Image 1 (spheres, one colour):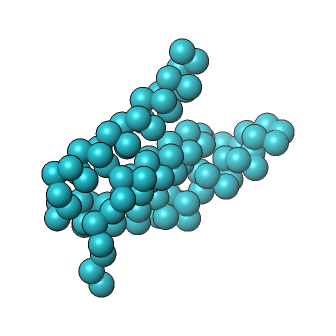
Image 2: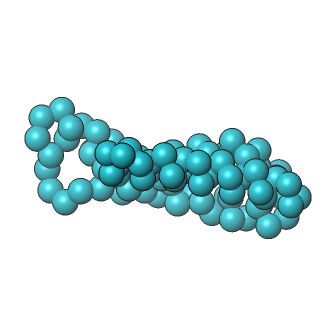
Length: 90
């Protein structure tokens, strides 16, 4: 199946899902209502879903125009930077 070049928002969406997945992968049970979030976004099935998004992006981005590639990279980095800032409490 051939995929169309991604909209830069696809990469932003992938980055958000990746941030949730990585952020909730902690060893062991979490207390209280946080355990629900860890089970939802840190589980192996969600990790597989995020990996699929990554594979799709890697499949189509090399064929996209340079402009789309730059926009996609910028969108991904915006989320990555914001996620890091939030995680560090800055």
